[in-house]
Amino acid sequence: GMDALDTQLFLHIGIGAGNIRCMTFGGSFDKAEFVVAGPALTEAKDCGELAKCGEAILSETVLQLIQPTKPVTRAVPRERMVDGVNLELGYFIIDEMQIRPPMPAQTMRSATLQALRQCDNSLGAVEEAMRRFVPHSISACVDSGQSPKEAEEGRRVTIMFIRLLDIDCEPFDYSKSETVNLIQRCILEIYGLLHRYEGTVSRFQIDDKGTVLKIVFGFPMMAHEDDPVRAVHCAIEIRKALKAIQVQSCVGIATGTTMCGLVGNEVRMEYTAVGSAVILAARLMQNANCSILVNAETMKMSSGSAVFEKICSIKVKGRDAKVPVWRPVETERRMTKKLAPIRDGSHVLGREEELDHLKASMDQYIG
Image (cartoon, rainbow, N blue to C red; front, side, top):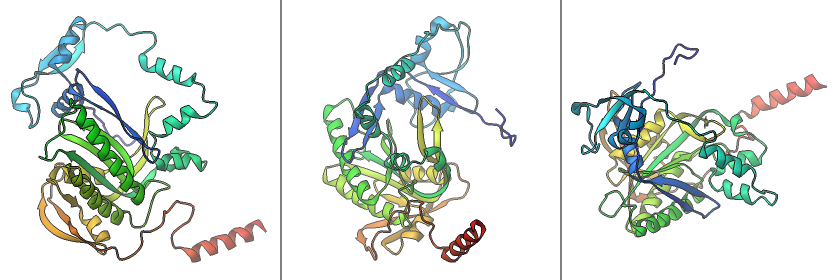
């Protein structure tokens, strides 16, 4: 579609089908994560990787399931296959379904939401259970009487992506019960350190590439002047804690201005950060090779409290020029000062003279 700025936006959609496993991790510090893993997500991700702008691609599994709708499809050419896609499966571009599938009068999602609204919350048990899955920064906004909608803004934040891998640097096999128990231990270790450094888990996902967490330092009510420092030291301690339980990790950290706000609708909504710094942090994680990589801005703002070594500039997908990258030396750390207090937004940093002048003008106007 076209927006008010005459910018044309396109979607590319991937659809997969198969078994999934629904899991809840965490529980400490009144925080938990609900995550889904399985072949269905892997198929959908592969289809999404193959889809070009404006295309919807479905897997061979999905095509077999929708045959009663007489779909009109075209096979994805072999030359379009990308690294990491399951080549044993067929992929198809869908143009239309000649027979519209029957839709139920009430979907399972709407039925679930209706049942949730009818639950007895007189003692606050439902709200308490749901709060576990809401980032602390957002629940703090609500508790202070501020709507998360009011916290939609461009913010300077530090983004950290962590990929968890087994001791051989391979993705975990979630069909094994011991894997779930190990990931629970990992999440509890990470929660403990995030509680200390005041970072927020923004997303937790599992796919064929591994187990990935997106963490934000600088969300509303949890922002600090030294968020890059916190992110670097938190990453070093997380890697140390995970190694102790035979888990490897790849970490990418980038600092920059992002748009933070609500994404979604009344059915499903999340407060998240989007922007080039988010993409860069994810790319750095992909190139980390069981280490920590940071961008130039993170290095500059943390150089007084950590030792960094310059890595050769790397080519990052989506950027024309190579990106300079640094790696913190995990065995050498120096905390030269205490961590900065939370910048909760109720006070303005600096500008004392301007504030005094503004207050005097307001008093004069009111008087």
